[in-house]
Image (cartoon, rainbow, N blue to C red; front, side, top):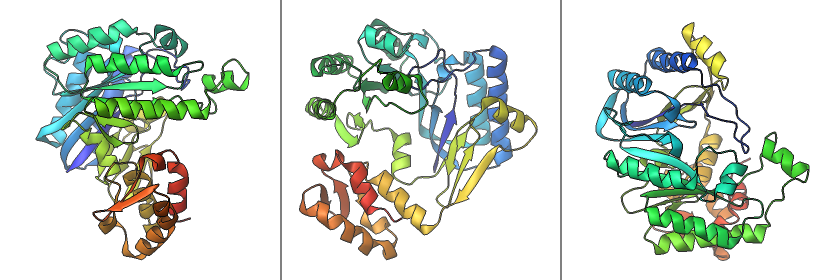
Length: 365
């Protein structure tokens, strides 16, 4: 079984925290869908598919006809499991009555980000808080009852009380899944430039940690499992697709910037949309590939499995690296930052807060 990840790098507007622009020309959308279908042929890979994820962009910018054509081709090329999880990322303001009619989508991931309209304007989002509520109703009316909401915390001048209001609003909507991330100032983005120029100020680390602690406390008290650093799910609603990344399950990536993984190699496509389309139209796969040696496989295990509540299954560790892992883990075990039980090594709640340091010390260099 494998996952299928399809990158749709179309945004409706400029995003202040990623700085990404993308055209919405219909002609380019058609060519992109054609290229995705052609890439499936060129790859000539035919595993049974257990999850499909349309995202890493805004697939809701595609027309119903384009989405229908894409899904038809997927089901033509691959053997898609009857119980496959099929997720589509959507902007709240793109959700329309009947938009999922005839599509196999059974899960929606919606980027709410915040329920404060001033913060939404700050990150140049088109939707309002009210539109998220309306979108949730529309999704449910179309028979989809597996919805994930993305949240963001750590906005400039955001208070703990403001963050709690966002959590309160989310819990009233009662989504099956919640992902929450701290605002990142990535070099080269407009937001980073604003930070450098003193136009905005990052919140302090203590407040950020308090926000994260509050998130965990509130969501777990409401019945959500904290099953990965940034992800929470009601019982039975963990993201099966994202979990495949953390549990070493192969996946096929289609589209510009998409990555693929088959246990022994990793492949990635060019990021430029036009280059991707032109190459595919010429019958050439626009990708690079690396063979994963033992060190890389071990390091990947550390940085993915340790993100989950289960942690690293020690039986999955290459035997020659097990002593190294346990030896380097010992100081953190003694401080209660790592926990060892049922042959699994996992981070404690306090350990998550210094996860980058712990992972770095457990990795082979």
